[in-house]
Image 1 (cartoon, rainbow, N blue to C red):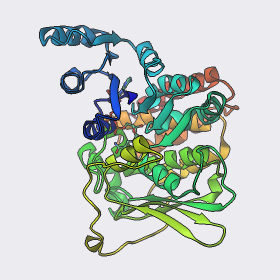
Image 2 (image 1 turned 30 degrees about the horizontal axis):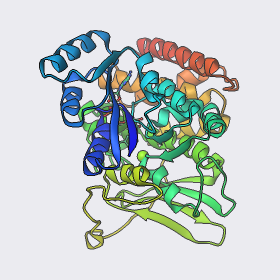
Image 3 (image 1 turned 120 degrees about the vertical axis):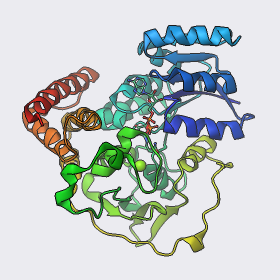
Length: 394
Ligand code: NAD
Ligand code: MG
């Protein structure tokens, strides 16, 4: 029986993880569940999974949540609040496995803390790795933690790597990674219409059901840019050895191109319970609850190179990947602020890339040598981005 802590339990990945756990309650025991402020969803999860700890980051909501649990007679669950509680539960001795599924930079500290104490990390929170790749991978090596990718593309690449492959190491058999992308909802929309797309249009992804931030990232293709940086760290590959491939059907979830000319692909229905179940059962396999892929429904598979004019965010991310240092920290922070402003209808869809580009121009890149440097670059980029958004003033 393994003890699991789910950081971001109430989100799309968190909910899928609990769905997989419910099928394997003989193998996993829920030790801790965390939420930012959605206490209703967290309450229902507590009733079903009876964790030892429940974290509500928002302190006022936590009080309300405690009353709700008490009224329901769930007095054994310890309620914690504030963001420091996230690190507290991700490093508990009874936790073997941490599902890192908080969205954005907020996931960095608890995920890094778990890596430092040698937990098995199931990594969905790509922003954490984008921000602190070198420090994070070093923490994994130093502590002997096991790192398993949850992002569907990275999980696919991991599955296509040679037997015994360990994340963070360069495989001398693999020549290139083919990182697939659906192209999102605006792959074919005339470019001159892009400034007028609404948040509702942007979050309606054609193939995947995800949280709002990553859905917008998929629409701008910043998601693929963040994933390219994530892949550089997870597979110790240079950005130039990673080719982004638009594959609108999302049947292949990524590929590895070997030195002998073999290309291995991982396929399946687009449901995150597949990579989640893969990582939870690794190195074995168990049922994910996902229906088998009906190969006869796959009438065709298309592949095309990405268009950087349509998707300037992807270009900016590729440049930041090559620049390294704090450039990806700045890129990520500016993107988080810009996406939030777009979702709150303060800027246009096409302004997201403008904010990020101007923020990158304003920021000085230095080596991301310490956590303090990373956090300061993140803070500064957020400040710059707010200023840039004010100046855009639509
Ligand atoms: P989501 O918005 O559905 O859920 C986010 C979770 O994080 C929620 O539980 C929320 O309470 C928590 N959270 C948000 N802000 C927080 C804060 N400041 N402090 C503490 N907790 C906070 O997001 P999601 O779609 O589940 O994505 C989670 C992560 O997984 C992201 O990094 C995303 O890129 C990655 N990911 C998601 C998918 C997917 O299919 N949804 C696929 C691949 C990777
Ligand atoms: Mg992905």
